[in-house]
Amino acid sequence: MDGTPQEITTLVGREVYSNNGVFVGEIEDVQLDLDAESVTSLAVGELNNELFADTVSPGQGVLIPYRWVRAVGDIVLVNNTVERLREADDAEEAVA
Image 1 (cartoon, rainbow, N blue to C red):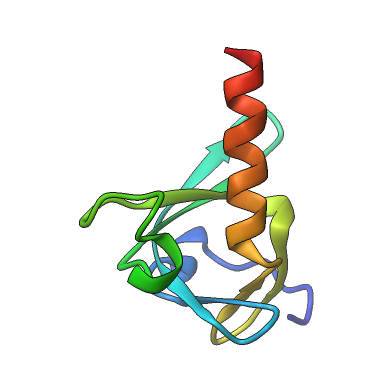
Image 2: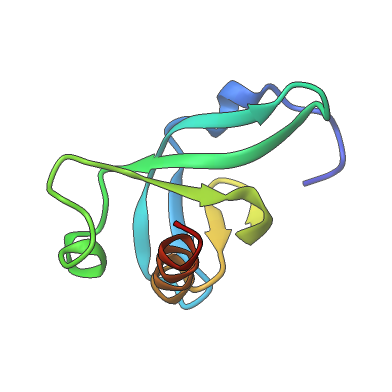
């Protein structure tokens, strides 16, 4: 991106891929921190069933922390999502 501010709504509908080029899903919504005026997470649906079959029920989505985003263009590139989501689930269980 060229640094020009864009509407957050332009993210909705973009496809999300891992750094390895694997389709993750499609952005359905964004989660914001209004105080910091920043995006905190991407709500991703239309998930790749092969990646999420063991962790997410059909028809559900996932929240991907925006800090995992590596690039935003015609598509959105994120860190290797599957390992990251498993690490986050393990951390949440340890806290609970």
